[in-house]
Structures are given as structure tokens and as C-alpha cells.
Image 1 (cartoon, rainbow, N blue to C red):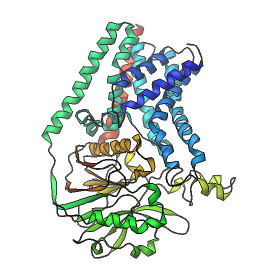
Image 2: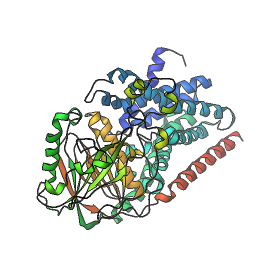
Image 3: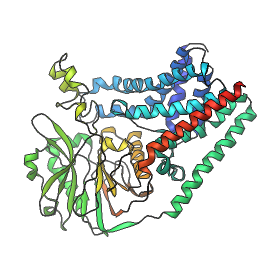
Image 4: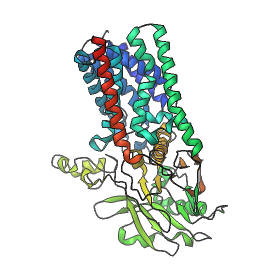
Length: 509
């Protein structure tokens, strides 16, 4: 393989095309070719440097096309961070691609000693790719965005398998099935073998679908009859949310949407992330007016709010009863790096002026204040729920509180405009429902608000950049294997690894 500029751009293009497999396009079949090109290129690499380069370039193209929308947040409301845009849209993909570059090096090294045959090499590519995806999701606070399993977000008859296998387990199975054509082609290098791989791929997808279809048919959606919930989507542009002169206008929009007549008796109203259009301290919660004063019928309010003290700000959820009692019921625990906290701030403060640190991320919060738990919260008289604010919903839940009966997710995707970001974010929320068996109720500022039952079925949805509300009864949870997902995923990894080594050993004989 010649090391030339066209070759470099070819691998980046293969990776970029892979982004079409995820929301909002969900053209999962492109991965048959793009993964096939990656596997073939890695197998024929002559040096470890070449393998690392191919894997890194492919991953850079994929991440660049998948998460470019993060840069949109730098232009929302203010252009003071616009200078950071080039570094954001290239630097973030470059960093994440290092995981896959290392994977390519390990894969090439193992080919020299262990998985020498094409068939075992292809299977170990599936295993190492999946492990890399897992590590990217947990190391350095993690970023499990666009997991492989999420390509099935619009194909519930396959996505349902995540309830048994977890998102990582379904992703590993997806890697194995969709790479069948390329692995067969690697082994025999004939078109006939490629088509044989396609047949095996179809059989694999059918097998995964069969269990899911049976489970979907046998598990109807059931509801609690006492809890009518309204999810409000005010569709307030980000630049207007940050405008102090729009405080009362924005408040009136929220109250007007909350006060509309409903066919369902509404007992709870949910406003999205930071919906309360002003910052308060914990000692001044009485500034938040009870919704009962602005609504014809009494209802409890759950709303996103920014609570601050002298040095820190907390992205929180407040409950306000119809009688006027106010209480913070949740503070965001898994923070966004460089958005809500500055990693290693204590170390950086020794070498950089404070004004530079505050220009990047105001406040004094650091990584040591994060807590990764999924404990349930009881609100009002309703069943206990797990609360997730924005970014937190992207993390697979392995340790869900057994008392929890639903998940509340509030978010503000207005930072990212009309881009793939909000659609991909929604897919993550849907998979939390599938994994845990808990219904997910999602209230978003500019969209996409939705209600998923415990099977991941979409019961109601509000499109992106539309103003409105969703009235729903609270769905009941369904049975889940969530507490066993870590063991199931580890078991699948071990089985596939053993199969790869056995095949390599057999081919040597």
C-alpha cells in the first residue's frame, strides 16, 4: 500500500461514510462495506505503523462525521468561544481515534503470533473493536456516544436484544454478523465466498430478530392509571434562553403550555433542563413560583433549574408541589468535560491564570465531584424514578436501583441546532429503556421529547424545533436482565475469543 495523500483521504472517507449507519439516517447496511474495507486493510498491513494509521484514519473520519455537531454549541447564544471551533471539530475526533489506533496496532501484533488465519483475524477484530468501544465509554469519565448497537434504533425487532445482551453485547453481535461478508472474502478471496458471507449474515440477523419479535408480541404496554404526566417542550432558541430581557416571555411560554386542556388528568408537569429562566441559590428557592398559581388546575412541577452558590453551579431538578413546597430532588452527577467542569483544574490552576480557566469553563468544579450512580428518587406520590439530566442518559445502566419504576430524562439540545446530535441523543434514551425495562419520559427544550415504554417502543414524540407538549399516563416497567448485563457481555467476549484462538490453532494444523 502506497503511503500517499489519496490513500489517507480514502481511509478517512470510508470512516465518514460509516456515520450514515447511525441516527438520523440509520443506513446500517453501509457498515458491510466500510467495516469490510477496514478489516481488509488491517489484515493486509505490512507494518504495525501502517495498521495503526489505517485504524486511526478510519476512526477519525467516522468520529468527524458523527460528532461534528458538538461545534454548534460554540456558536449558540454567543460567539466568545468561536475561536475554539476548529480545535473542537478536529481535536475531539483525533483524541477518540487514538483508542482505535491502538486497537489496530494490537490486532496487527496478534496476527503475527496468535490469530494468523484470516477467519480468526476477522473474529478478533470484532472482539477488539467491541472492547475498544467499551473502554472509550468508561475511561476518563467515558463517552459512549453512537455505540454500535444504536444503528438499530429504528429497527426495534433487533434493538430489543439489548434487553438481554446489553448495548455492548448487541454491538459485539452486530460486529460479528455484519462483518461476515468481509471475513469470508478474506478467507477465500472469491466472490462466491463473499456471497456465502452474505447468506450467513442474513441468517444471523434473522436469528437475533426472532427472539426480539416474540418478546415484543408477548409484552404489551401497560400503564399506571393514577399518574398523568405532561412533558413540556417550549422550543426556546438558545440565544433567547440566555437573554435576560426574555425571562418573563420564556416563563409565560412554559406556563401557557402547562395550562392547556388535556384528555388525561394531569397530576405532574415536567419542564426541560434549565427551564426555570433564572439562576437561584438553594436559600432562594421561594423565587420559583408554584405552578398552581399560573395553572387553572392544580399540578405538581418538576423542572430543570440552575442552582448556584458563590463558587459552584449545579444543574439540578426541582420539585414544586401544588401547595408551594419547593425542594431540589436531584443534582447532575455525570458532568460534561470542558462544558460543566474543567478536568484537572487543580493542576492547571498552578500553571495557568484563573481568567483563562474561567474562559474555558467557569466555576471551580472538578472531576472528583462526579458520582456515577443510578439511585432512584421518589417524587410526590408517584413510583420512584431514576433521574438523568441531558448527557447522563448516554451511559448504559448496569446498576439500576431495583426500586426504580421509570426514568426521567430532561435535556436542552438547543445548543446543537438542527443537526444529527439531538437524534443520536434520543437513540441513547431509547436504549436505556430497552436495557433496563424501565419506561423513559423525556422532556427536551427544543426537542426531541418522547415517551418510550420498557420495551423501547415509541408511545409519543415531539419533533425537533417544534413547540408543544406530550400528555401521557406513566407506563409500567417490564422484566429486564439489566443486573446481569456485565456478566453476559464478558461471557460473550470470552466465548468469541476462545473461538478465534481455536480456529487459528485448527488452521495451523
